[in-house]
Length: 164
Image (tube, rainbow, N blue to C red):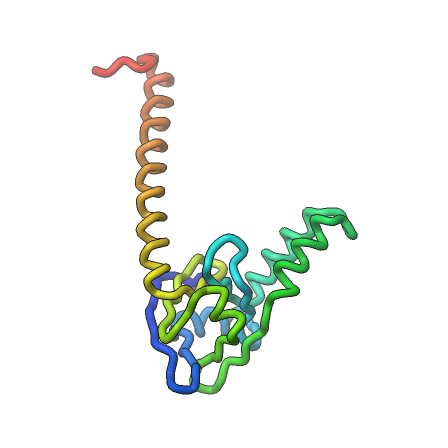
């Protein structure tokens, strides 16, 4: 699989290192990226991390704006200017810089959360709260979607909202 899936909570060691979960390391290895590309998530107290797939998505996003436009410059500064390429040691560990830890409020443990083409690194309690909120929103969206699908089916069947 070439996607980051699942979530893991791990502790930082005495030297401030944390092991990237083995399944995530395997995705990075297949991606061909040397190290770990990482930056503070723009709208949450977390870190976005990944390899070439994440960089490709960033490039595609920035390319939506005309060269030299203010928006392009701002996205570039926010996504490249604050990013770091972390070295992964032989045992699959990285050291999160103080700037990255500060952005995410990370202390002695981290939660890794797979998001498909990238993963996020969270302070574990904040991740639990984020996951609970996301789950509640997805449940509500699922109900809305189910209602829309049912209504569309009724229109196709000629029932126009009438229930049998």
